Length: 169
Image 1: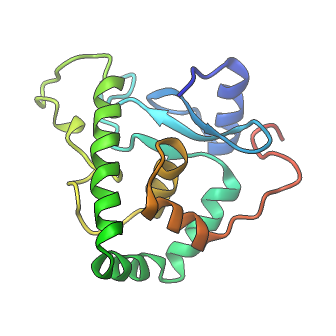
Image 2: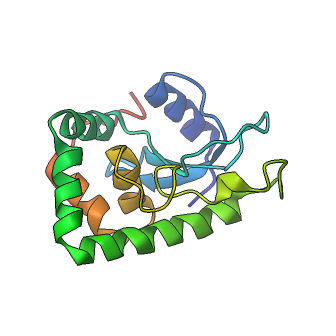
């Protein structure tokens, strides 16, 4: 992960359509050099828990993964998880890796909730809970590889590489 520059912050705001909350830095970049995944701290600037560690910011990726979700992608990937022990193992390892990274991003120490926001999975819920957000898995595959389930999400979403970056446009 690298610190977000002022140019990155402006690009991320354009991508999201709002200022980012709890921004820790840029976790992955697209082929054009723009932010594609941002890292989030466990707590935002007001001390409110922020459940997602890696946030897919690239509009092209967000759209492609959203279309996969809306076309039954979650159910298909749940079936793959049930049938493929290697995918389940990859998810467990990725959950542990993201939890460790998340703990390192907590610059505020223990909180009134006892740090509960640190004990979350890739999706901000209980580890190994049913899938609910493929965007989080795609983001983790790009930001904290290797992650087989996240790569599978990206392969099935088939995002097209645009001629220009959405971050700088």
